[in-house]
Image (cartoon, rainbow, N blue to C red; front, side, top):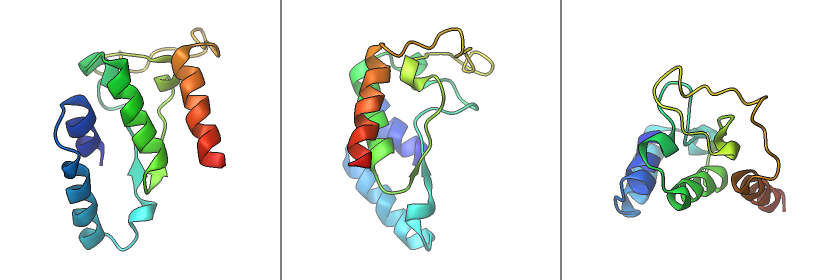
Length: 116
């Protein structure tokens, strides 16, 4: 789903792309709920490096945290980190953690909704 999430939320492809990916995954995997969903990872430049639109990033994060599957949340996304290719995508969090940032609070809200 990583590339599908990028295609839809970063590059503006049709949301139908997600439905098509689900259909494909249902045929290919016995348990699609065991598959991981993520927006950022340590192997690629971050979403916000490739597309700086925070609204699109929030939409992608919301989808990855709420859709079928196991959500993986890459550290620093809650701080809107925007590093490029490795190692720039591995920014130091412990010096930059801001629990009052908009993205941190947004992530808290999504996680509270998931718990409810």
